[in-house]
Image: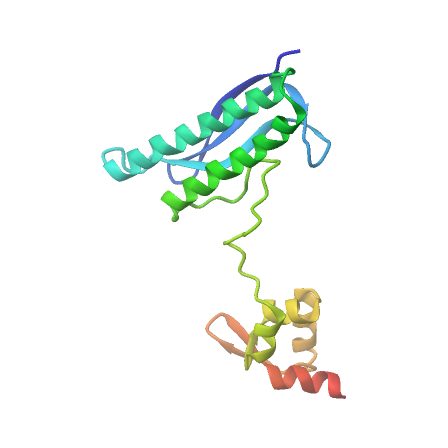
Length: 186
């Protein structure tokens, strides 16, 4: 059975459009094993200023990348003569397309990646190593959560019950690392 794969757009706020692949009939998502008809690519078209050459060239390049992904997915799902090792290489090709696209347009904001492609380097990962957190004098609530492997609510509860002293600068709550250590010396 042939699967029809179309490139479509979904309108978002701020004159942006998200690009996705529409599958007909539905396919089984390789990661969740659920039936799905859509694969959001995490690529966006910006229509805020149609006269801007830079935005237009980026939009053109984005559509080209999305079309290449569509062609690769079409080859992956519809070409039964394809060797299994070549089918496994298709997500790697898609990942390479994304890496090249992000290298050329580093300011692109993408929330996800197409399924089957994992970003091993994950440059957007803002998590700090435990070593970095242990040498900081002041920690945010998120950093305390990460360091102690507890939820935000647990940290907020400890602050509210005066078990953990904290200060606030603007909207940021800061906790002294020494106070965190004192909490466990009791």
